Length: 635
Image (cartoon, rainbow, N blue to C red; front, side, top):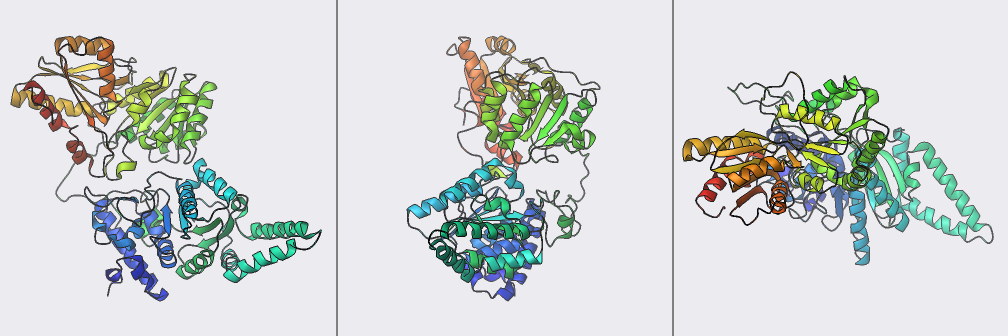
């Protein structure tokens, strides 16, 4: 009999004897592996926290108690245990459940997450809110060792220790060891120190010592320092004790009995507690254990081998991704220019810079999950005459907005921003789509913003950015290129210069980045099937716009469609409207339709379906053109 068949909520889990939990863990791992192999998703991190999640739900009382999962990409077991087992096969699919915790999806999801290092701050806020309402429920923040590289995590620790509120932080150490794990002795001490009777004895003894006349307070401080020194000698807690947290660990995170014992013990404490748990990424699936980086976020794969899942009977030529083209171009350019520096935030593989790091280790800097620091650090490099290229996903660069503004743009420092995953990214959804960068970057004085139509133009924009004497950003999408022919020699693009890619007299289509290819497809269909002839401009630059070229065509063709894979408000289309207004052309018989993302957060789903849904593909452009020319309102 399958244990999973009888688990519909944490209450069902609590009815199981401890002896049954290892079998349940095996069943959960099997379900996760089978589902991710078909859907893609975050595998290694989820396999690493199966026992930890089981123990948390076994000891605490959800949803009254709250668990905040940092990043949230490791919450698959949590979703399975909280009434979403039957929906689990739909995870990350359009219309299915999210791959991350989501408040609107379940009362068991305490906080909507997707970016790292937020759990301690959010958890502390929830804990303070509960205290103000006299709610005795517990709050647990689960954070990975990688997320502890971000300043936000330490800001949360600092306040939690200062106000001494009731918060449990679980440090899931699965890759980067913060301090040596001293094994069985440390585990024993952690469980011993956390025992209820010892905690009570410790407090009672402290009060007794402090009550001794004249010497009590000094004796208490001496005893406290002795205790902390002993714990620091045999455990890894010195750092966290300095934040006024009671530290326990490291304890092995795959030993259910030990986890349940220590969680039961620390549950009764009413002060900041940090439990350090060591886990193995990919636990229970050999390919993921051997290659946890690859299986962190993986596409569809064959369970038996771990290899990429292919469709039988198909044969395609593998095209390079934009990320790969960026990485290879950076290496080629750095061989000729010793001033080029590459900076990333814990994503050397994800941003394509692993080859650069290997070729130029002295000129590569991984700052950890610290985008704000990475930008200001790069500004410092720029003041010394170097040419830093900061490669960060669009959605994560949002976290460094003030540093871009204050530390780079005010002094117009030559920092280039390689904004990867610009636009719709797919199944990771709300928190990962890069749909805001054109808006927040073009608003900054001194900033140049551009986007390539294909991978060859990306190479040219990289060189353009490196040669530019001020702040500049180039954004490019997730996924493979178009198979464009590569120029033998990389040449820069003049700042602010667009290009005409098709000519016609009926309608003017202005595209930016990946939407140019969709506009070309739409232009072909309009011409062949509807006898509508379009001029199509590859705008290249959102800022500065090629006003001369665009206005020349607007005066001839006053029917304009702008198309962007970005938010409409404040984006590329808005920039064109502003330019027309400044030129005094608005209201002079000009018709304009802006295609882009409306005022909403885009759900998760395949890129092509989401583009179609929001009318930023070729079909959407065709429909907009026909509607405009027939004077029908655009849908």
